[in-house]
Length: 303
Image 1: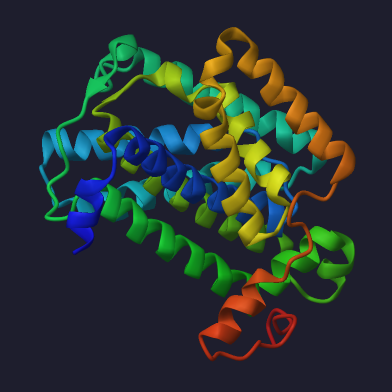
Image 2: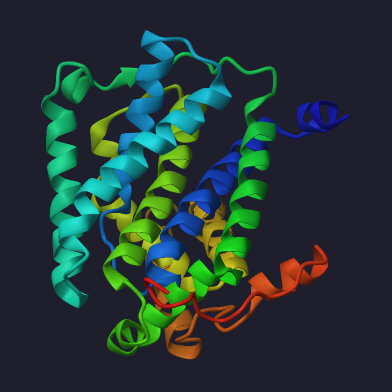
């Protein structure tokens, strides 16, 4: 029935919806490290590119089922984030933002010069080996990402991330291993970015390292900030608005980016906390599922 409904949708609208779904997964991933943990990361596009090229190479070289492809792409990306996150997440503020930005540029330059990624020519990605159509696969991944984000936000782990975001020194004094929690949240964020990157690669059928530059990272950060830092519905709304806005403003031709920027500035002036900032979406969702909120903070390390 779902496949029939998907086939009945106009292909252009369907393409926009799939792009929105992929953007939602990427925004939810960035929301874990930036919204929940309070660490400003400007290199999220680097993890998206790692996931995209990992997924493309897995399809080209191994031909594994698409579900395994997504898991492996996310795992490879999370491992890369854990390796790079351990040294750089000891920094804070502008220094962390600059390091993540530099890492994104390093990844981009490496992809542009590696033989396995076909250098600047990019890769043509074969269709995914999956019995499900791509829109339905993206929908399932979006639902899983939303539920996972809600569970993270409502768990002891999520409460520890919130404590780190609010006051890292106080969290450390309460026995929270801030360095470890930040690396773990960075890896979770990168896992979602890797899955989103693999979906992006297989949906478009072609990827190029130049597609994952600084502007892509800024777009994802704008989605999270526009919706409201730390808000799961905010990440959904921000991703939907900023993914669809360029399409709906096409009739303005060269002026559409001017209107796009003006709308962002206006929203930040009148809603500085984001459109849905402060909404306790995790508790709301878990109440719907019949689950209770856990204790606020994890136990002390070693207790």
